[in-house]
Length: 341
Ligand code: KG4
Ligand code: ZN
Image 1 (spheres, rainbow, N blue to C red):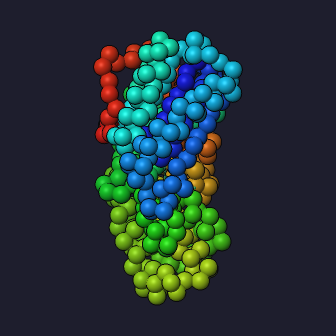
Image 2: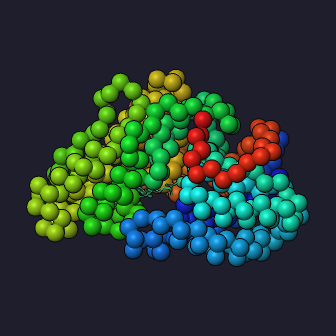
Image 3: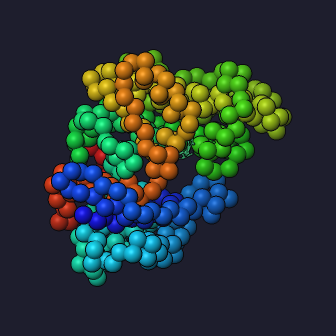
């Protein structure tokens, strides 16, 4: 079965084609393209929804044409279109879903609405095999931080989540306090490489609470005070900037890793996936391998390029839904707020 995946929920326009074998549940990514709008939004310090919609509208049609040419496929060979229907920015979602529906209508191809976070949480399956069910996924992106118990395709229960800011948001807001451009996660990760994480003391919010929830807004405030107490960011030399970046990265990663391990133990599901943009962070990946290994927890990580927004994960989620005989709903629409469970 050949799936055309389309993703336009935020600031990346992405298309992908996945060829899967329904009897084995395995397949191959034939091609993928991602057009990032980061440079357009960077000067505003974050994503501007109206600008994002317009950019998707310009980028999407030629990208579809280009990926069809790249694979040499015709629309008659596409079995299904998988489109991100939410959550995300309403205008951005509407561009993708309207385009997918029009394509489907013209070429007589069924269109399957996919939850963006379902795409992220199944992403390890694009490049490797999915872990055996049940497993725990730590979903960490710019808008979400949650621990999800996965019992099967479409069977997701949230066992922990952030009470305020998402981890990616904490990276982005802390980066802004350091005068770094958007998106802040990769900037902080880059600076942190030469830094001493112990020079500045930052809290580990909710690390010792008896639940699987997170809270990151206090950490961002702690960064603000730490910078202020050290004389303000203007007074920072390159080393101080690196040390602060390392302290921020260490604080966020330690909480994420320890709570994820606790979730695996509590849920008796010793397999852990991390997904979403923050999962591209190398320190997080390393810390996870080190700490989870000691507890005999298997760690499954998507390729870094499939951690940030992409359409391969949407095409793959569509394929997995088809394998699990999950029918396309008769009536669906773009949903900017769409609970995963
Ligand atoms: O999943 P994603 O691409 O988009 C959303 O659905 O939100 O995640 C974007 C988030 C941003 O907050 C960005 O700063 C963060 O992921 N991010 C990172 C890294 N790469 C992206 N955070 C830390 N380290 C990275 N290497
Ligand atoms: Zn995402």
